[in-house]
Image (cartoon, rainbow, N blue to C red; front, side, top):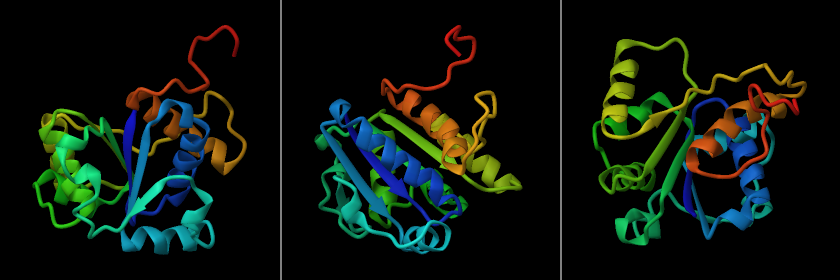
Length: 187
């Protein structure tokens, strides 16, 4: 599987960190992982987690202005794009088809190619503009998966709480991921 991960400037860098950490563990299920971050994504990572170091991850990182990145074209056949966390501003630009950076261009490509786009908004409360943008993206084939953790599995750490969301993201993306499952007798 080829996957694009976009990290935007919404609060919730822990969701992006858990996603990247889990993708490291799932490398046997990927052929390419491309990562692109907004400027504010790096700022929020450093505010919420600590120093950002792309070298900790074995993925290809792309500048948000790099329109030569493979996933800027549908011919590269990246099957899934996850925007996590997804700011309300980024969601609005995706909903209106604005392709002014690599994140919005890649989202536009994924939607036009009828591939899987998963947005993980971390915004509250929502106004009608946010809701309408979610509706537009959903009607275009995207999936809105709000960063709303579950507590069935009794998570104890912030990472475990974030993983309840990220495991759902990975499930929807098509990965085989060990996770707490409702109704599983082994739980």
